[in-house]
Length: 214
Length: 214
Image (cartoon, rainbow over all chains, first blue to last red):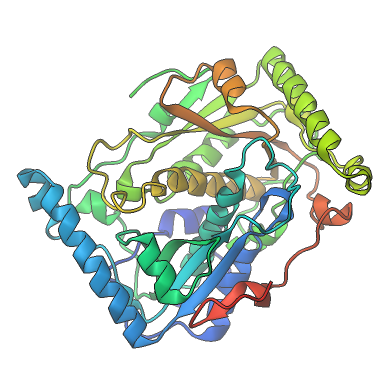
């Protein structure tokens, strides 16, 4: 899929998927990758602290080591499931670490911005929230480029921290598989495979006060 | 500013600002608001759990009560600053709660999705991360509509929870001031007012391994 400047942000939001199986096997080129990372880097952040970093991983041995760890975590989750859920889970692919050709680990540094971070005094979590906002910018920019992103969370954080040399005080918050795709699935995998359906919008919107509507 | 279908996601990412002072005073209409909330609701979420809710607040008394609380928290932050930082902080507007005409409180429900949330077993924080991703979708869709968003974090969470009737187990994570704007500032307020400059992209990107570059 060629880059398009004509997709609106609504188009891209609808097109975006959590990609596992659709990577072409080509690696994303550095120019495109840096355009995507620049979009991430333009996210809002509390007190303009910009507490995120992006570690780009392409060494096949690193990708394989992480994929093996994730496979083990997948097995543990599978074993904890009731039998009917385990059967539903079986065909669901949870990562494309090797196939995507590129991993981006997004890290968070809560010390960035010094002692008095404007807006973080009352809600300290706004630090990590800033880093997560950057991930969504990255994801949407990639989608507009025809580049798929798959967020892998089946891992132990200390394992990942050591694998990529993250110093104490910096936390890896996501491994993103990033690579060109031929197309995006129209229906999210977890709906297609019957894991969990969407909640309707009107259940999520409350007027004037929070009301419990399931 | 009229809605535009021709802005690319990169355009919108560059245009987006954390808005405080540019609200026109008109309230956003419900049709536009629901389009923006629908964009938020299409965010990715761990295990398709969709753990977010949106509470829309327009009663002027509610907006005023919250604005008074935020003013008090601003005073506390100001008093904790060294003198030179306090002077830099003085002209910086931190909220547009009343002027925007609409508050959206985004809440997070970690119980949504049941016991076995696919992908959340190893990294439980991916629940709240999902809710934050929805906020960035909301922010970008609003920007494309000429609607400003300002994230207010100068508040005590229990105060906000009680104000809008959030039940135990559900957490308010953001108050967003949402309203039409005539234009977006080109430079973020915290840079314009000399609070904190941007970090360059190349400091944030690491190749192959995390390397500490400040």
